[in-house]
Image (cartoon, rainbow, N blue to C red; front, side, top):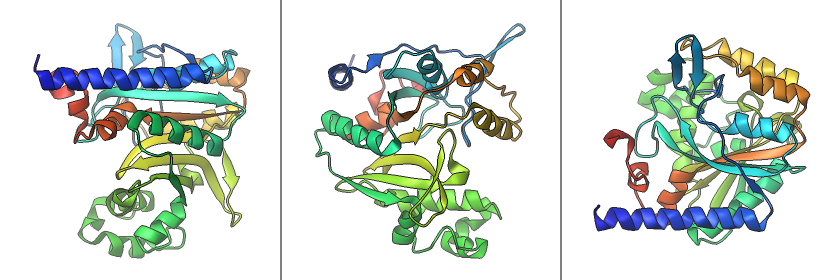
Length: 307
Protein backbone atom coordinates (compact mmCIF):
# COMPACT_ATOMS: atom_id res chain seq x y z
CA UNK A 1 0.00 0.00 0.00
CA UNK A 2 1.49 3.40 -0.93
CA UNK A 3 2.57 5.47 2.07
CA UNK A 4 0.47 8.45 0.92
CA UNK A 5 -2.70 6.35 0.89
CA UNK A 6 -1.96 4.79 4.26
CA UNK A 7 -1.35 8.24 5.74
CA UNK A 8 -4.67 9.54 4.39
CA UNK A 9 -6.53 6.54 5.79
CA UNK A 10 -4.89 7.01 9.19
CA UNK A 11 -5.94 10.67 9.13
CA UNK A 12 -9.49 9.71 8.17
CA UNK A 13 -9.61 7.20 11.02
CA UNK A 14 -8.50 9.90 13.44
CA UNK A 15 -11.28 12.21 12.20
CA UNK A 16 -13.80 9.40 12.67
CA UNK A 17 -12.59 8.99 16.23
CA UNK A 18 -13.12 12.72 16.83
CA UNK A 19 -16.74 12.31 15.71
CA UNK A 20 -17.22 9.38 18.06
CA UNK A 21 -15.70 11.29 20.98
CA UNK A 22 -17.82 14.37 20.21
CA UNK A 23 -21.11 12.47 20.42
CA UNK A 24 -20.03 10.30 23.35
CA UNK A 25 -19.30 13.42 25.37
CA UNK A 26 -22.78 14.75 24.54
CA UNK A 27 -24.63 11.53 25.37
CA UNK A 28 -25.78 10.79 21.81
CA UNK A 29 -26.13 7.06 21.09
CA UNK A 30 -24.24 5.50 18.17
CA UNK A 31 -26.39 3.26 15.95
CA UNK A 32 -25.62 0.81 13.14
CA UNK A 33 -28.32 1.06 10.46
CA UNK A 34 -29.23 -1.51 7.76
CA UNK A 35 -27.78 -1.34 4.27
CA UNK A 36 -30.97 -2.68 2.66
CA UNK A 37 -34.48 -1.33 3.22
CA UNK A 38 -37.93 -2.29 1.99
CA UNK A 39 -38.77 1.05 0.40
CA UNK A 40 -36.92 3.93 -1.21
CA UNK A 41 -35.83 7.26 0.19
CA UNK A 42 -37.83 9.70 -1.91
CA UNK A 43 -35.78 12.89 -1.97
CA UNK A 44 -36.16 15.23 -4.94
CA UNK A 45 -33.39 14.73 -7.49
CA UNK A 46 -31.89 11.68 -5.75
CA UNK A 47 -32.12 8.25 -7.42
CA UNK A 48 -31.75 5.11 -5.25
CA UNK A 49 -30.31 1.76 -6.28
CA UNK A 50 -33.02 -0.93 -6.57
CA UNK A 51 -32.18 -4.58 -5.90
CA UNK A 52 -34.28 -7.65 -6.66
CA UNK A 53 -33.95 -11.09 -5.10
CA UNK A 54 -36.65 -13.17 -6.73
CA UNK A 55 -39.93 -11.54 -5.72
CA UNK A 56 -38.30 -9.47 -2.99
CA UNK A 57 -37.39 -5.85 -3.78
CA UNK A 58 -34.98 -3.88 -1.61
CA UNK A 59 -33.38 -0.47 -1.92
CA UNK A 60 -29.96 0.78 -0.90
CA UNK A 61 -30.45 3.81 1.36
CA UNK A 62 -29.59 7.21 -0.06
CA UNK A 63 -29.23 8.20 3.59
CA UNK A 64 -29.87 6.45 6.95
CA UNK A 65 -32.78 8.81 7.64
CA UNK A 66 -35.59 6.26 7.57
CA UNK A 67 -33.88 3.76 9.85
CA UNK A 68 -32.91 6.38 12.43
CA UNK A 69 -36.38 7.92 12.49
CA UNK A 70 -37.96 4.50 12.98
CA UNK A 71 -35.73 3.98 16.00
CA UNK A 72 -36.50 7.44 17.37
CA UNK A 73 -40.23 6.72 17.02
CA UNK A 74 -39.55 3.53 19.02
CA UNK A 75 -38.13 5.64 21.84
CA UNK A 76 -34.31 5.38 21.69
CA UNK A 77 -33.74 9.13 22.01
CA UNK A 78 -30.86 11.15 20.57
CA UNK A 79 -28.82 9.05 18.13
CA UNK A 80 -26.21 9.20 15.39
CA UNK A 81 -24.63 6.99 12.75
CA UNK A 82 -21.84 7.04 10.19
CA UNK A 83 -23.36 4.82 7.53
CA UNK A 84 -22.90 3.85 3.88
CA UNK A 85 -25.18 5.75 1.50
CA UNK A 86 -25.80 5.10 -2.19
CA UNK A 87 -27.02 7.39 -4.96
CA UNK A 88 -27.31 6.19 -8.53
CA UNK A 89 -25.74 8.33 -11.23
CA UNK A 90 -23.77 10.61 -8.89
CA UNK A 91 -20.09 10.45 -9.79
CA UNK A 92 -17.61 13.32 -9.93
CA UNK A 93 -15.18 15.43 -7.96
CA UNK A 94 -17.61 15.93 -5.06
CA UNK A 95 -19.98 13.02 -5.68
CA UNK A 96 -19.76 9.24 -5.59
CA UNK A 97 -22.41 6.54 -5.99
CA UNK A 98 -21.23 5.12 -2.64
CA UNK A 99 -20.12 7.34 0.23
CA UNK A 100 -20.47 7.77 3.99
CA UNK A 101 -23.24 9.81 5.56
CA UNK A 102 -22.93 11.17 9.07
CA UNK A 103 -26.45 11.69 10.38
CA UNK A 104 -27.88 12.51 13.80
CA UNK A 105 -31.08 13.59 15.56
CA UNK A 106 -31.76 15.72 18.63
CA UNK A 107 -35.09 15.47 20.44
CA UNK A 108 -36.73 18.74 21.43
CA UNK A 109 -34.37 20.79 19.26
CA UNK A 110 -35.16 22.98 16.26
CA UNK A 111 -33.07 23.55 13.15
CA UNK A 112 -31.38 26.67 14.59
CA UNK A 113 -30.05 24.83 17.64
CA UNK A 114 -28.92 21.88 15.55
CA UNK A 115 -27.07 24.12 13.06
CA UNK A 116 -25.03 25.48 15.97
CA UNK A 117 -24.07 21.94 16.99
CA UNK A 118 -23.06 21.10 13.41
CA UNK A 119 -20.70 24.08 13.41
CA UNK A 120 -19.24 22.95 16.74
CA UNK A 121 -18.55 19.50 15.27
CA UNK A 122 -17.05 20.95 12.09
CA UNK A 123 -14.66 23.00 14.19
CA UNK A 124 -13.55 19.86 16.05
CA UNK A 125 -13.07 17.91 12.81
CA UNK A 126 -11.30 20.59 10.77
CA UNK A 127 -9.55 22.71 13.39
CA UNK A 128 -11.19 25.81 11.93
CA UNK A 129 -12.91 28.34 14.20
CA UNK A 130 -16.63 27.77 14.93
CA UNK A 131 -17.49 31.06 13.27
CA UNK A 132 -20.50 31.13 10.96
CA UNK A 133 -22.63 33.54 8.97
CA UNK A 134 -26.37 32.97 8.65
CA UNK A 135 -27.86 33.77 5.26
CA UNK A 136 -31.38 33.11 4.08
CA UNK A 137 -31.86 31.36 0.75
CA UNK A 138 -33.57 34.45 -0.65
CA UNK A 139 -30.82 36.83 0.50
CA UNK A 140 -28.15 34.51 -0.91
CA UNK A 141 -29.68 35.07 -4.37
CA UNK A 142 -29.92 38.80 -3.78
CA UNK A 143 -26.31 39.03 -2.63
CA UNK A 144 -24.53 36.72 -5.05
CA UNK A 145 -26.82 36.50 -8.10
CA UNK A 146 -28.26 40.03 -7.83
CA UNK A 147 -31.87 38.92 -8.25
CA UNK A 148 -34.82 38.13 -6.02
CA UNK A 149 -35.73 34.47 -6.53
CA UNK A 150 -39.26 35.05 -5.26
CA UNK A 151 -40.23 37.85 -7.63
CA UNK A 152 -37.95 37.14 -10.62
CA UNK A 153 -39.70 36.00 -13.80
CA UNK A 154 -38.57 32.99 -15.80
CA UNK A 155 -37.18 35.48 -18.32
CA UNK A 156 -35.09 37.06 -15.54
CA UNK A 157 -33.76 33.62 -14.63
CA UNK A 158 -32.94 32.88 -18.27
CA UNK A 159 -30.99 36.14 -18.54
CA UNK A 160 -29.03 35.18 -15.44
CA UNK A 161 -28.25 31.73 -16.87
CA UNK A 162 -27.29 33.00 -20.32
CA UNK A 163 -26.26 30.11 -22.58
CA UNK A 164 -27.17 27.63 -19.83
CA UNK A 165 -30.87 28.61 -20.00
CA UNK A 166 -31.58 25.87 -22.53
CA UNK A 167 -30.66 23.23 -19.96
CA UNK A 168 -33.64 24.11 -17.75
CA UNK A 169 -36.23 25.31 -20.26
CA UNK A 170 -39.24 26.78 -18.45
CA UNK A 171 -38.73 24.73 -15.27
CA UNK A 172 -38.48 27.49 -12.68
CA UNK A 173 -37.27 25.23 -9.87
CA UNK A 174 -34.54 23.78 -12.08
CA UNK A 175 -33.45 27.27 -13.12
CA UNK A 176 -33.15 28.38 -9.50
CA UNK A 177 -31.24 25.20 -8.60
CA UNK A 178 -28.77 25.80 -11.42
CA UNK A 179 -28.25 29.45 -10.45
CA UNK A 180 -27.70 28.35 -6.86
CA UNK A 181 -25.13 25.73 -7.87
CA UNK A 182 -23.36 27.81 -10.50
CA UNK A 183 -23.48 31.39 -9.22
CA UNK A 184 -24.03 31.26 -5.46
CA UNK A 185 -22.54 28.17 -3.85
CA UNK A 186 -18.94 28.96 -4.89
CA UNK A 187 -19.14 32.12 -2.70
CA UNK A 188 -20.39 30.33 0.43
CA UNK A 189 -18.28 29.18 3.34
CA UNK A 190 -15.34 31.40 2.47
CA UNK A 191 -13.43 32.42 5.60
CA UNK A 192 -16.34 31.40 7.83
CA UNK A 193 -18.90 28.61 7.62
CA UNK A 194 -22.15 29.63 5.91
CA UNK A 195 -25.47 28.47 7.32
CA UNK A 196 -28.15 28.95 4.66
CA UNK A 197 -31.68 28.98 6.08
CA UNK A 198 -35.33 29.50 5.13
CA UNK A 199 -35.50 27.44 1.95
CA UNK A 200 -38.66 27.70 -0.19
CA UNK A 201 -41.63 25.77 1.13
CA UNK A 202 -41.56 23.78 -2.12
CA UNK A 203 -38.12 22.45 -1.08
CA UNK A 204 -39.27 21.27 2.34
CA UNK A 205 -38.50 17.54 1.83
CA UNK A 206 -39.13 16.14 5.34
CA UNK A 207 -38.91 19.52 7.10
CA UNK A 208 -41.84 21.32 8.66
CA UNK A 209 -42.99 24.64 7.19
CA UNK A 210 -43.02 27.92 9.10
CA UNK A 211 -43.26 31.65 8.30
CA UNK A 212 -40.19 33.82 7.76
CA UNK A 213 -39.69 37.42 8.90
CA UNK A 214 -41.83 38.63 5.98
CA UNK A 215 -44.65 36.23 6.78
CA UNK A 216 -43.89 33.97 3.81
CA UNK A 217 -43.99 30.17 4.19
CA UNK A 218 -40.50 28.65 4.22
CA UNK A 219 -39.02 25.27 5.01
CA UNK A 220 -37.51 24.86 8.48
CA UNK A 221 -34.34 23.67 6.81
CA UNK A 222 -30.68 24.64 6.68
CA UNK A 223 -27.62 23.76 4.66
CA UNK A 224 -24.04 24.44 5.73
CA UNK A 225 -21.20 25.28 3.37
CA UNK A 226 -17.42 25.35 3.64
CA UNK A 227 -15.07 26.41 0.84
CA UNK A 228 -18.01 26.60 -1.58
CA UNK A 229 -19.02 22.99 -0.86
CA UNK A 230 -22.36 21.88 0.58
CA UNK A 231 -21.59 19.77 3.64
CA UNK A 232 -24.79 19.44 5.67
CA UNK A 233 -28.55 19.42 5.18
CA UNK A 234 -30.74 19.67 8.27
CA UNK A 235 -34.42 19.98 9.20
CA UNK A 236 -36.74 20.74 12.05
CA UNK A 237 -38.45 17.47 11.28
CA UNK A 238 -42.04 17.18 10.12
CA UNK A 239 -43.95 15.02 12.62
CA UNK A 240 -47.31 14.97 10.84
CA UNK A 241 -47.39 11.41 9.47
CA UNK A 242 -50.24 12.01 7.01
CA UNK A 243 -48.57 15.07 5.48
CA UNK A 244 -45.23 13.27 5.24
CA UNK A 245 -46.79 10.32 3.42
CA UNK A 246 -48.59 12.68 1.05
CA UNK A 247 -45.28 14.37 0.19
CA UNK A 248 -43.70 11.00 -0.54
CA UNK A 249 -46.65 9.90 -2.66
CA UNK A 250 -46.38 13.10 -4.70
CA UNK A 251 -42.66 12.52 -5.24
CA UNK A 252 -43.26 8.84 -6.08
CA UNK A 253 -45.70 9.88 -8.82
CA UNK A 254 -42.80 11.61 -10.62
CA UNK A 255 -40.62 8.46 -10.59
CA UNK A 256 -40.23 5.76 -13.24
CA UNK A 257 -37.42 3.56 -11.88
CA UNK A 258 -39.46 1.12 -9.81
CA UNK A 259 -39.24 3.05 -6.53
CA UNK A 260 -41.67 2.02 -3.77
CA UNK A 261 -42.89 3.69 -0.61
CA UNK A 262 -41.05 2.64 2.53
CA UNK A 263 -44.16 1.34 4.30
CA UNK A 264 -42.27 0.30 7.45
CA UNK A 265 -41.03 3.87 7.77
CA UNK A 266 -44.52 5.32 7.36
CA UNK A 267 -46.00 2.88 9.88
CA UNK A 268 -43.41 4.11 12.38
CA UNK A 269 -44.27 7.73 11.61
CA UNK A 270 -47.95 6.95 12.27
CA UNK A 271 -46.98 5.70 15.73
CA UNK A 272 -45.47 9.11 16.31
CA UNK A 273 -42.15 10.84 15.68
CA UNK A 274 -41.21 13.06 18.65
CA UNK A 275 -40.40 16.71 18.13
CA UNK A 276 -36.81 16.68 16.85
CA UNK A 277 -34.26 18.11 14.46
CA UNK A 278 -32.00 16.03 12.24
CA UNK A 279 -29.03 16.61 9.96
CA UNK A 280 -27.12 14.66 7.32
CA UNK A 281 -23.45 15.45 6.65
CA UNK A 282 -21.47 14.21 3.67
CA UNK A 283 -18.58 12.84 5.70
CA UNK A 284 -16.27 12.33 2.71
CA UNK A 285 -16.66 15.99 1.77
CA UNK A 286 -15.89 17.03 5.34
CA UNK A 287 -12.74 14.87 5.24
CA UNK A 288 -11.79 16.59 1.96
CA UNK A 289 -11.89 19.98 3.65
CA UNK A 290 -10.16 18.83 6.82
CA UNK A 291 -7.26 17.24 4.91
CA UNK A 292 -7.06 19.73 2.04
CA UNK A 293 -7.94 17.17 -0.62
CA UNK A 294 -9.46 17.95 -4.00
CA UNK A 295 -11.89 15.10 -4.61
CA UNK A 296 -13.94 12.54 -2.73
CA UNK A 297 -12.01 9.67 -4.29
CA UNK A 298 -8.90 10.85 -2.42
CA UNK A 299 -10.68 10.31 0.93
CA UNK A 300 -11.78 6.72 0.22
CA UNK A 301 -9.83 3.50 0.71
CA UNK A 302 -11.08 2.12 -2.62
CA UNK A 303 -12.86 4.73 -4.79
CA UNK A 304 -15.96 3.79 -6.78
CA UNK A 305 -14.12 3.79 -10.10
CA UNK A 306 -11.54 1.31 -8.74
CA UNK A 307 -14.03 -1.04 -7.04
